[in-house]
Length: 173
Image (tube, rainbow, N blue to C red):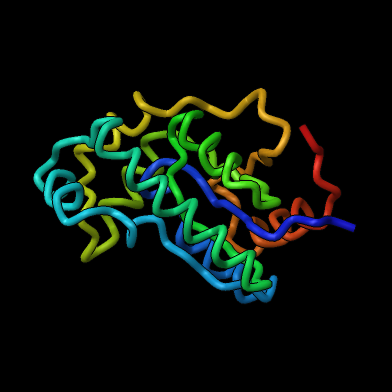
């Protein structure tokens, strides 16, 4: 039996984080959080204008997310989070929040993800920033609490694999 309380669905913009995290919240009986909702107005404006965020702009964003996860777990909730998690230091900051979590990494190739981004409407993140997302990404290949999920799987298959990963016992560090 797993003691996971937080599922962090991570990956570059356009990988399907929000879709999977939202479906997972419904199937797992969790509340859903979107990390995009924790960005400052300044950060959103920068990204909308095609400028990637600096680590200095990301640090308070990650801290606000970690606080929200702590509050959710303290209230007895399960939480799913759609979160880029591009840098290991950001994943480590969520780990340091002290909540039992597992990361689900939506892994895929840039051309497929770029096509998905071109098809979505009303999102502030332009396709032009995808290359910077991949350049920033520190793939979680050696992190025991990360499950890799291919972006090209159908959503129901991703959900099934995510639920299996969350049911598995946590590997404690």
